[in-house]
Amino acid sequence: MARLLVGPFNRVEGDLEVSLDVRAGRVQRAQVNATMYRGFEQILQGKLPNDALVYVPRICGICSVSQSVASAKALADLAGVTVPDNGLHVTNLMQATENLADHLTHFYLFFMPDFTRPVYASRAWHAEAVRRFAPQTGEQMREAIAARQRWFTLLGTLGGKWPHTQSIDPGGSSRAVEPAERIRLLSKLREFRWFLERHLFATPLEDMAALSSLDALWAWHDAAANAGDFRLFLSCARDLDLHQLGAGPGLYLSFGAYSQPGGAHALASGVWRASEQTLVEPDTLAITEDATHAWLEDAPMPLHPLQGMTLPNADKAGAYTWNKAPRLAGEVVETGAIARQLASGHPLVRDAVAKHGGCVLTRVIARVLELAIVVPMMERWLKALEPGAPYFTACELPDEGVGMGLGEAARGALGHWLVVKNGRIANYQIVAPTSWNFSPRDVGGTPGALEKALEGAPVLPGEKSPVSVQHIVRSFDPCMVCTVH
Image (cartoon, rainbow, N blue to C red):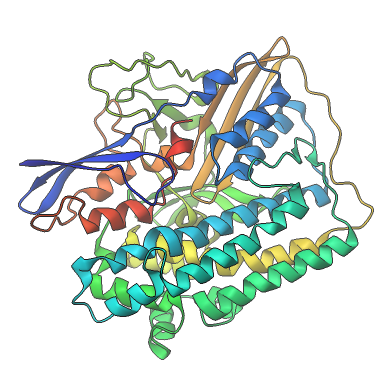
């Protein structure tokens, strides 16, 4: 058996290294290493609770709004404050802007360039993939970068700046939207819709979102093969059998995205068990973190985040990553757009997962589909803003108490837990989406979602950075800087 060390990966957020045991041209065992330690959970100890809103956005430069929203929710839970409708709508608009930018970036800049690799030069679609997606020179890559830049100007109006927006408050948003600004924001939404409908889908968003089965998706593809960039991805995926690559654990977690007036979510929360086709609400008390294989001090048993501890031990025997191993009632879960769409009951994603499970194909389908689903939601939230109505509720934070803030970043389930004593943060623990997906083995030796998904991946003769491994890793869209917060 040969040992292959892959990394650091390019085109991912942060530092990632994967150790592979390879035999007979297949990965037999994988260990995923988050190689950097940052210590935000230690930095926050002893700070004033509201200071978290300054620190946590700086965990990450690409999902800082999501971190802000989760922290604000934890502080709102601590204070018992309710956010007014306008505050919910504006917060959702800010977070959706960031999340959809991440989806766009993942598809065009992180995922599709792998199809331009020389290993695929003999494929019928390769020349077209190079023309569209070659790093720095691809025609559609340049179009996507320009669309992304224009899209982010929404956050200048909604939150003052991006990243590290500071208008998000436990009671809502401190930045009201003027009527004239709403018209400009709607224009920017429609410009982004135009990009998606012309370049990515080559079809109206509503028609894309209405596809109800995998057969319907393939029929849509075959009706105009390679018209639009998503159809070209589907051509590549079918030719390469990407539905057979990167099988997930079959248990999917969503905390619910985009809180609505009345307490519901625009994209539902839930735990979807694929083998039984069942959906239940997440039991947050059953969340634990196991540090057995992390360079962190162990507790006698896996801890719930409210009791969690983060104490570095770089010389720990048997450790191979800075990431803890989150578990839900002891089980490995997968999170991300695929989990949100399964929990929300989207028929295309449920049918695709029923046929192929969580895999490279179905993860990308779910992520791209979310672009078509959420942009119309954003148009409705913007129109729902009520002139003159409040955007936040002022509140006082108690000197003692606990708070939990749950939500969905682009990459999946994000949770913040804090404990306040004597008016100061006594403990602050964060479980990020990539912490779930890229977790190490736990005390029982059970591999995390990516570690398991890499087992069986083909390794071609002479490959030092196997293209199959690249596809699987990128299908989860890692954000390692959040993982090593």
